[in-house]
Image (cartoon, rainbow, N blue to C red; front, top):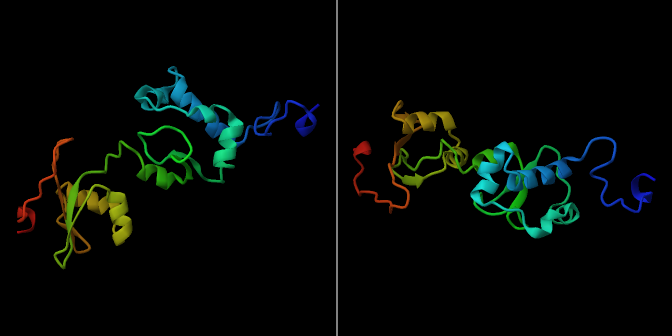
Length: 176
């Protein structure tokens, strides 16, 4: 007996013969990242204490909560320090996942000042570039001091020590 006529048939995402579905692959890989210390990615997931909730250890429950994986999307945790569980996961584009990485090398705390003198403090260059129609590479070049401005915006990196409160002086020497 094959398919739905088989009493052991549950979801059709892992056929005995043929390809598993993208949804099933995402679920399987999520469990491997969190539970298999022999996996390369384990250190960034299970090794950091990231877990899969008990409910999602069963694929049928995962499928019920997340639905089918839409084409071109992958499983993403909204809070990268949170577990794989309902409310903290979504199907996301590659671009959304890149912007949501915890180790984003381009995410530096910075000050931006436009031609009108409005000052903005941010730590998300991707989002800042998107909101203001700017080029991410040009922002990074400015922040690293290799360029003075980009489309009327001036940028300055704010050195900060993790856990230290942010202090912004009233007069910024980089804009004097």
